[in-house]
Image 1: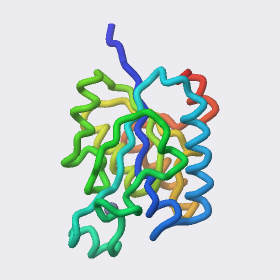
Image 2 (image 1 turned 135 degrees about the horizontal axis):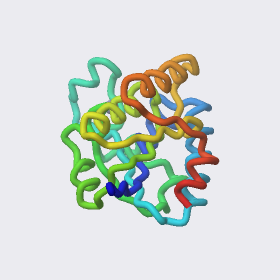
Image 3 (image 1 turned 180 degrees about the vertical axis):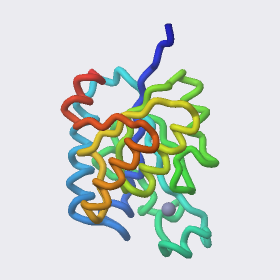
Length: 180
Ligand code: ZN
């Protein structure tokens, strides 16, 4: 019998995506919900925070402009999450797996069953889910803990992940039961 161990991947809940450069009221609301969700879990399963963190002149800045510069406030985890135990993984690309420590951490812990959420649904969450799919990991997306600027793009992305990567989509209330 294959045993799947669960882990929680929190994508880019860093200041520049919440209240900094790309901040928005939806992002703040979603982060507050995510913070409550994580505080209410009982640490049964590991949490990994993946955090956008760029060197100066990163080629990604040609698309988005400068954001999440390494060593600045913009790239720090939001203060509502600061007290939560978990791995902190720096990432430089939309896909949290690409050129980061995420894969190694998951293999070290034998985690193959991911619960993923964060910001933005259609960019870093979706690319991270693709990275998980290409590594044969199972993914549940917690929809109400994801956000993007345009709610229509959020919905499209949730269904694209189901269609292309076979993700299961749940609300945080169900995820809480499954992770407690
Ligand atoms: Zn970035």
